Length: 328
Image (cartoon, rainbow, N blue to C red):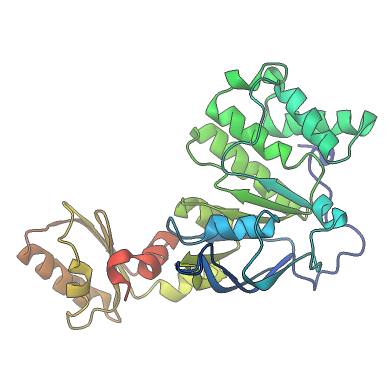
């Protein structure tokens, strides 16, 4: 990669103290009689980080991104991008958006798509041609540049979708599930490019359902549930905080409905969540609690395939705070 291929860093006048994104007590209701999609939600994304928004389906992730991009207005609260309260033309030039569903024209070629979206961002002439070639290089789709996109594989469409969001060299990049349902090579390439963008000073906000992806890429995360932030912080700090008291058991079959609440009544066992065949629990003394959990499972006809304790991952933390069976 050459420096010409990656969007420029924050640039003059971008005070490092000013957060890239500020969400302050934002709520969103689509109907007065419906539960809020977002409920008094606040998030601060510093400049120059990769920030992950995690949460189960219906947690409010897409609603939040739609508000940040100006597609929805919040019912209450405020949003600031790079210190600005409104999406002026200047702010829009700072912002790149990569939607979950590829926003590309299938009957145009990859090059024509980039040229079209580049013109939409105000690029012309030699500068447009330069950015198109740079984006084709970033995505590694130069050999397919003049083929119609309808003939692209899913991975190539995702790559093109990414660089369309980069055509105008944004300072803040927002991505909704950028690697969903693609091949491992394309996922690895997108991860590499996101790290390069971060190294160039671009702030990246992304949603993902892949906890391992978030753990590998993100410096900070916020986990949403029912429109609220239930836990947030730097990834390494969250892992350290939850490491000593976490137990993960893989089951040979699904436990009975509501069984997590039963397990939480065991002496020495804290929070318990169940998701499919994965049981995650916390305990001040994991070894003793693990034995009690195994005995309770066996009494209900469920065996353990594997057991780990004293370790933590974002998946453990995610299940602990969003597991359906453990919610009040």
